[in-house]
Length: 89
Image (cartoon, one colour):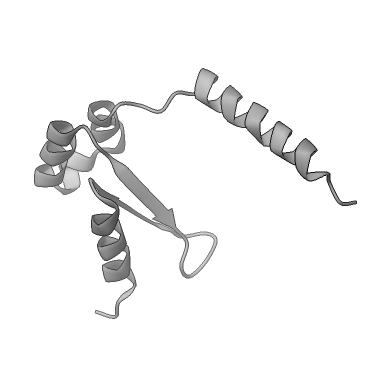
């Protein structure tokens, strides 16, 4: 059964509104503490707090069971870290 695009868009808008209203994302300093970023990279944690900007990327390159999660303050930084995870060592 094919869903009407308008119905789907309306449903997604309601779902997004629900998520934003009831499950707010933590601020960058809260996220640093919750994700324990400072334990892995103290310099990055300090930059995130100073710039008040956190971008994270979680991806599943090999299997749906295991995943990588990288953090940064810019899109370019997280893309570089993600590619570094995938490059042969």
